[in-house]
Image (cartoon, rainbow over all chains, first blue to last red; front, side):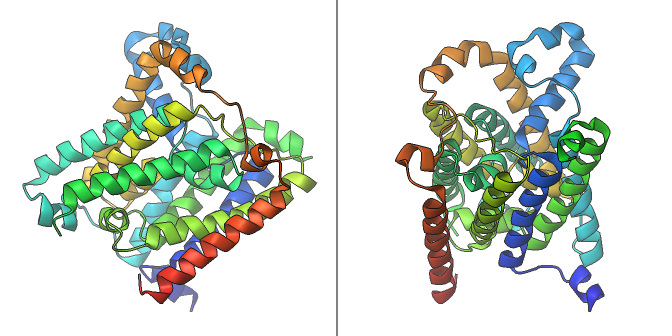
Length: 173
Length: 183
């Protein structure tokens, strides 16, 4: 029974959603923190920049707000990689994917085109998330839960932008 | 006791990691680490992602507002600088569709072996770094529309439990409707 649950590839979205809600409780109780992911990327870039350009990077205004060092949220993002790895290995869904199905059907091309698209997508995500002050986790889940006006606005903007762009890029299917 | 735990940096880094592991596990089991599942959501053909988010919001809302009432944990609503939120949010949305993942689920996809997610992660690092570089030029624009750390119940001056009940009902009705029409 327990093995079946651990190895079944997909769980009900409601079970997963309730589980994530409970994780938000746990974060508040044991860490007094709201789950979020996008500052970890800014801090990581800052750490890389520090390696290349030295300590003066710390003087950048943004890095005074978000100090480029490993913090709770950085460890959370690292944990996500590990957790998804464990899950996909247990369920047998782990595989090296170069080009996802819908991309192959609508855009086509080889892995290089997909890698370029993913990089540009990531660029927009990283920039947009820091401009909006959070991502799907920090605004979309943790922030909406706290009834923050900023987060409800961001959540709507994420999906309006996402739906319009997806229809434009992949709408052909 | 809990306050002292919040100050323990080593333990907190471990907690962050463990919560991340559970989060990554759940995201993968929900299908949210999969490009196709997220893009189908944005194409409004499959509502797995919104079902996950909506049930997380309902569960989280009820629990978190009880937790901050009885425990030393505090709410930390992000400041509402509405113009950058709208513009940044739309830019984020465009990237969301193009990468087919978001900052959290891209980290998860990396764990499931997605090679293209790795390029997305590199892009996010550069994008976030780019924002950090031009941030000094944007502070005026950001601060001009800053409304502070406002919450919906604060703006409407209504007891937050009414808002929590109303949002929970609306989200539950939407999910029920989606199931009824087979999405």
